[in-house]
Image 1: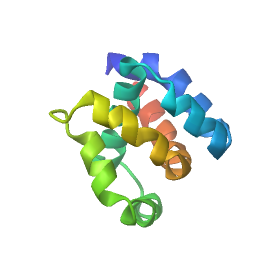
Image 2: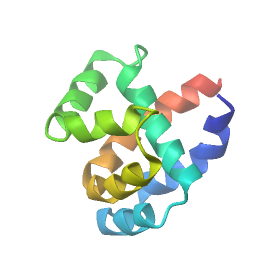
Image 3: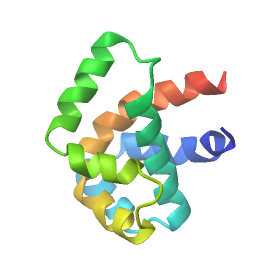
Length: 109
């Protein structure tokens, strides 16, 4: 969980910017930043700590790009391909981060 402390400022910044700005940031991320985002998505998808409302909202968000988000969560997949895929998912990523940030903060406590 050490990565959460380092990743939280990046995730909070991505959650606050507009969609088109988020896509630009995601296109220029380094490998470490890409890995932080993929880990955050993985923790949100697999978390059992989410309340029912947030879990249902998350399912709705993931429904149309489910294959892409699953690809991001698998560690054996190529970092290069993950890095290419992140900017395409920029629109839905803000909503997922709005669920991820409070969850990761609760894990720090």
